[in-house]
Length: 473
Image 1 (spheres, rainbow, N blue to C red):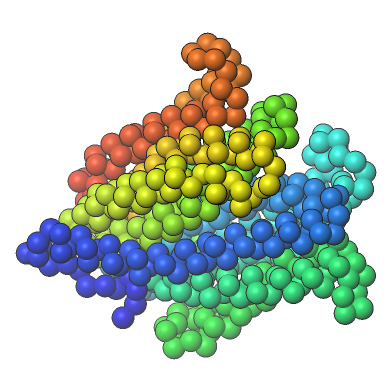
Image 2: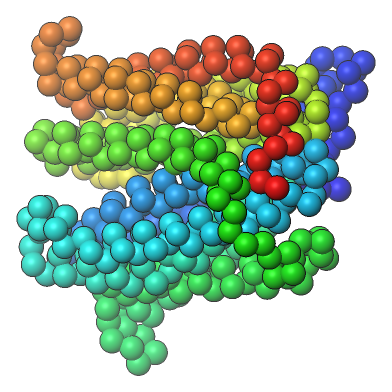
């Protein structure tokens, strides 16, 4: 039985039994997603560590290059992420004939996104000039991006095909190929960065080539699997080819662009905060980065549950089971709150031990411990908002949530954080902790507004049910 094709709970079953059944389905769907997310994070850790052992310039170049391509990729990842609820909805409605047309329109959008990303990342000279980088660091950065660009089509191809595999409930597929990519990236980095097997040492530029090769091999292996697996026998990329359809692409973009923009807004916010904190000195910046890394790692679990929730809600809407969709949407908030509470307690209790894992500098440790206290509260608000917005994406409700997130981050979180960090208007200037309080306020605003949206929208899900049978034809 496919992961997403779990039997629908019987309405006559006790509420607790139905809820636990749905939570089990989320765990089955979300477990492989979590492993895939961690594998993708591991690629970044591997790149950072191995480039750092080459030279400080190589480490800086890879860091700057990553900060340039990552926001672009996150936007296109969010945009193509619309395929998951779309295909999952068709799957729930048993409208199998609409699945491959939707997939092909997503592949066309991935191709267009690849062209845009390649053009932007291979022409970043003006941006590097504005950053006033030392000449050699700028050269390595551009070389890294030029090499990385070769793997962009494979990266977005896998992102689009994830809409097919995850949408059908087969979340283990992308998990397997994400792990494969990581396993390839490690030796490729060693060969290209340090110059092995007769190749010259390329430093940070070699890191870009290693990433491109690992992306390319993983994407090729995924294509082979999809064309040979019995599970996908009824879904043939070549035999079921369809020509570009503007209406179909508009439907995907209508759902996906708000998702991509929301993710981009969130990512850009943290980048801007890092720039604002720079004048406070390297100790403060280091403590902030450690705290951010810790909560980002913990966030992988609720994020994975949220992605599974999107798949399950869209499947249930397609299967015309809106009552069960409402049940899982609302009960997931209980699961999310419990998860966030456990994480908050861990951060409170083990803040010193966590800081010591990252650094032996006592000053940085002190800043990190203080920020982790605020990060614990930040974590609670963050987990609740991602659960709400994930459920709404399952209903294909993305536009209003985009505006809610924009208001909460840039209308509440950023201004409040700036004032608390640098000004004495409300309380004495708090330093870096002020931004964490501001972010928590912004996320609390998002949680409340998205929660209201979810509780108001979910009961009126007849529109979502009808939308599940529309779209790409």
